[in-house]
Image 1: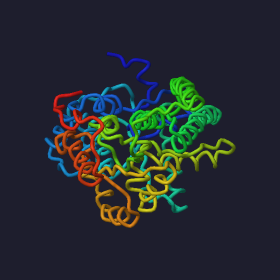
Image 2: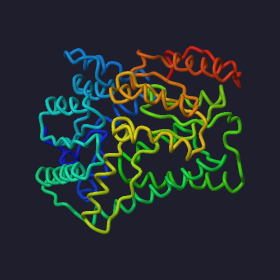
Image 3: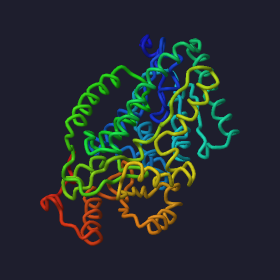
Length: 397
């Protein structure tokens, strides 16, 4: 039948394209991340949900070697499981070449106007920055041409200023997490919330949530409530996390007293958006998008990847949970460098292998066994709760 009016007001975009890009058009258009609900949210809730998408991607002849996150994203299209709610699509190469392939396949399956907005992997060079800014401006021009809606500077300023308030509170949370025992948020809640609101861009719901969290945090700090009293080790989790077992840190705390204070995904997007001039806004927006999940600290060059040690000191951590995404060429290439640094600095680091959304490569039970073995044989510690050492959760949510 006729295309609904709402359909013509929506911009579909890859889940790794930040909602901040679309602020100039928010008065008239809505931007919605396409893969976020059918893929990214679902796998955190039920680790079975994306396996058919990964298999579907390989069924059309694509190799199993690239990132399974990218495979799941374009597997949605192979099975026609993506929501059709917009006349255009904006994609990205975040975080790697596998995402480039995703954009190509999405363009093929969607068969509608698509703008690919690549972000540079090594982004410190000023010339690279200039190129990235032109890509963002190209996206804005694409939207203007496709929707007949003009770039609205005042609208951008309004949303960017509001988003900066979220960033300011994020810094406040980091300060409490780094310097007190009274931080009331566990690692997985911190990371997932940070990813969602940073990717989605400013929305009223984020401010509402921050007010709730601020009241709780003010109470725990004022009354000196030690929120994780069983803590034996303050850990930082680094690199790309296993999406099918994001809640491993809750188990690790209850079983071994490992308190995952902060992780790499929480520390992304650390960029204040200036609104005094168009040039400053464009510069900061490009920096922000280059600091996307996995972009900066996984494939953004060794100087960003090795910032782990600065953050470890900042958050007073004595242990690293080192995620080992088995199909990520960026992190695999620097594995040995991390090993050398851990030895040189005498740091306890537990390597946790996984395959992002695909639980079949390394099971959740195997992840727990690896941590159990390290805590028993290297740390010579006994579990806080031995009943949590081994259990069957193959069918669990």
